[in-house]
Image (cartoon, rainbow, N blue to C red; front, side, top):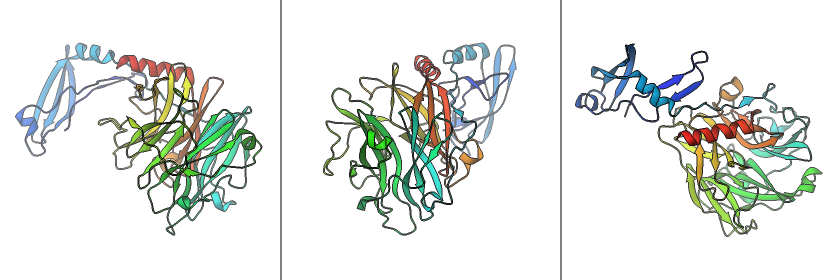
Length: 403
């Protein structure tokens, strides 16, 4: 069904959206709009203003020309009730900050989808790296200012070692993908996607002490699968603290974001995550195809800040980032989700690579009140983007009140 809606753009900066209608102004109702060459279509092709009225000319069912009118002042007044400012992240000035290294076979094809952890006055980046045979491992880099990489190790810090992540099909993707890091006490928990190239990808969990991590002694615990067998489950992360005495875990099963609770993170390979759906794709919004979390949620005074990716149903699939606030005591309660993307592929290194039109984050940190988001561009390189955390939260709360 084609409908007519309206959007208000800033006079001096028309890329800036001031307000938009929350509902269609015109939907196919009349017989000449519902039946014709292409049914259920009202398609606006021109409009003009005369005195206080807006005249909209449109095609009906691709068969007839028609006219609809409304009071312009009333329309603008109604739109301004839901006035909001689009939230946008700002790219690092020297993006991309990491590219494939042809001197290291394990990361010669792509580096992308980075997790991040701030500890010992340093930003630690654990990223997915891919070799020419499409095997994914994890590399390590760090930054003293958050913007530029000051250290990058020549060897991977994590590689496939269990049957469930060893390559079963020559020439296909496999390995350890898309890490998410959560520090609880003095233990770092890492969720990642384990894929053997044949069976559906599943969530694996491992851990390492903060002391060993900072010392670069990569004594990772034996990984264990925590998502159900035979099901495509990925994009998982543990909350940074217990909620009502239990560990909370977010994951993407199917097309939606799920929340589960566990009394312990000592999974034994016989019990798996379940939980319930807390966020679904939204029809009519550009995250209508699939959604999944970016990095672990960040605790703020306004709620759990969750960045998540949305995938549109457009032919290019178009991965972009959005933000949501979850209730601190009951994260299954969504306070607000952004109506528009806060970050989307625009530059050449985000639009062209291994997979076109992708910005995909696995981690974000806060340094001195500023949110630093690390992301993969077109599944090929790593970039970063920032926004003032207080500004982001204020805009999210404003959106929640405008609903």
